[in-house]
Structures are given as C-alpha cells and as structure tokens.
Image 1: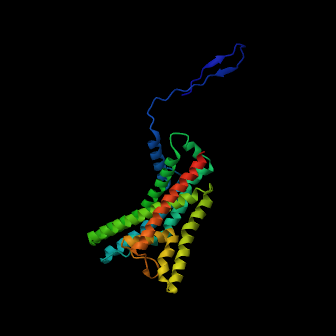
Image 2: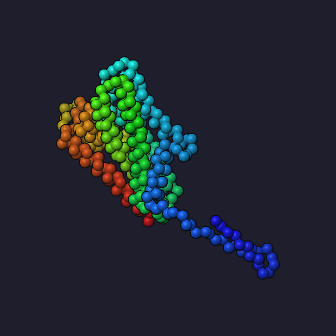
Image 3: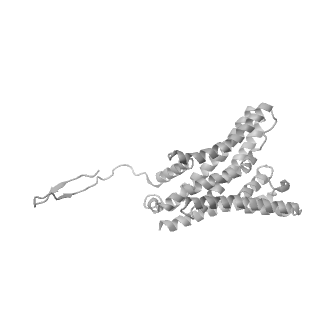
Length: 302
C-alpha cells in the first residue's frame, strides 16, 4: 500500500515532496505450476466465452448446441421406434459434424492467442514465474480440452440414449469408448494445427480465414482426389491420398483400428499397415505443432 509522507519546503510555499513507499509481500508464492493452471483454466473458460461479454459467448455456445442437437434427435428416434441400433455410430459422428468442429477451431484458436500477440502482452507472461513451455502447454491443453468437450458431449448423449433405448450394454460401451479415443485424437490434432496457424498473425480475422482454409479446403481437395481415384479404379491410392487432410487422417485411424466404417469412396479404408502410417502421421503432426509453437513463442519472448 502506498504511504504518503508530505514534507514542507523550507521556503514556505506550497511545494510538497511525496515519498511513496510500498509494503513488502510476505504471503505464499505459488510459482509456475499455479500460474500454468491459472492460464489453462482461464483459456479453457475463454474458449466458451465464460468470464467474457455476452457477445463472446454466442458463437461457441451456439456451436456446442448444434453439435448436440442431432445426437438428441437420433436418441429420440431410437427410443420412439425401439430401434436395434443407433442411426450413426459413435466413431462416425465427429466426421459427419466436421464442418461445425472446423468452425469452432477457426473461431477459438485465434481468440486464444491473437489478442496476446496483437497487444504485445506475451513477453509479460514470461517475465516471471511462467516460462515459454508453460504458456504453450497451457494454451494447447486448453483448446484441446475445449474441443474434447465439444466432440465428446454428443457422444455421451448418444450413449445415454442408447441405454435408455435398451440397446446392448456391452456393444454400446465398446462403441462409446472407441468414439472417445477418436475424438481425443481429433481434439489434439485440430488444436495443434489451429494454434500454429493462428499464432502466425496477430489479426484475428486473418487467423480465422487461415484456419478455415487449411481444415476445409484440404478436406475438400482430398475427398475430390479420392473420388477421382475411385472412378478410375485406382483404389490402392485412396488410403494414401487420405494422409493429406486432418479429417481424413482421423477417419483412417478409426477405420483401421477402432472398428469404424470408412467414409472414403467405396468404404475403402486403410489396412492395419497403412493405418499404422496414419497413426504415426497424426502423432507426428501433434508433436510438430507443439514444437513449432514452442519455437514461435521463444522468439517472441526474447
């Protein structure tokens, strides 16, 4: 607390000297771990507009509702018609809703990092006690967690609905677990790519456009090439073409190892050997995204 000590000048005029002092802090110093957790929690809350203006809550909450409503409708239909299975498998749901997921990443990845870049506050984080790696991990984990909530919530709705419809418990539990693994990989991959792209520019609008372009244009281009290969009976190249889009990468992993039906033309998914390549590419992209973010913010913090 500032303490003011007025000193009267010897000349007798109204000039005063203010001696401003500060009390020392004797409380606990919580350190890097606490700072990292705080940055993570605030970034995660910000991904859904919590603690921000009402305007900031509209888009993320709307996208969350859009993700969950089709699942609720499918559950209602399954319960009403006493169906023997859900209309859509757990591993297929995120692929069908990939446009909504891409829009969420495009809107929230720049929000997570662009303001810090635009207002040049990143070096302040690194003054103490937080370090560059702490900042990157917190931001990466927060966006991945937000994406996992977005993609896992409708799967939970489907699972609860399947149990209410009295579908086989073992089959539904297995499918739900496979779906959770799939969306966990998707969340890590999309979060890493989104943050890398958004960290290139401090302008949020440019970041949104760039993320949408990378996620949607790559998927459209890969799907078109796969359709051409299928029309020309070049089916052996279809799985390899799928390596060049984040969405088809996840589709290939889950069709190879998680029992999912492939969305590739002709339902020609990768074999187990090709699926191993898919897994390596996905893990490599996640690790590369983290490494690129780390290098980027180390340069900014200098």
